[in-house]
Image (cartoon, helix red, strand yellow):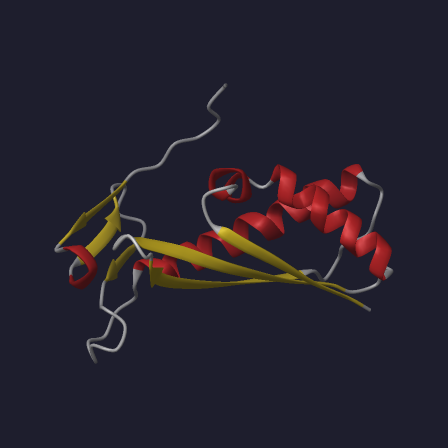
Length: 136
């Protein structure tokens, strides 16, 4: 595989610590959900990245398919839970709004996008992902 881009982040203090990109362009204090401490958590950061990546892939795929996805919006809901074996696992719902397309066009576009998106490819068969499509 030809690598187009790499970035690196470093975290200290785990889920209650701090994380930042090594180039200094973005940094977050971290907080465990429900702790009352100000800060983001890894699931929120994952949701941000996945939503942006999926919506970007949707734009690329819609052009390839000759569809107009102008005004699309992608939201990703990330849950975390414990497995019966004692480990932890993520659970995802992706909500995609594609105005101006028929339901059939939107479903076909989203299915194709889910095959192209790097986050979708990284999580496939590892995380339960449900796609929710709205077309108007």
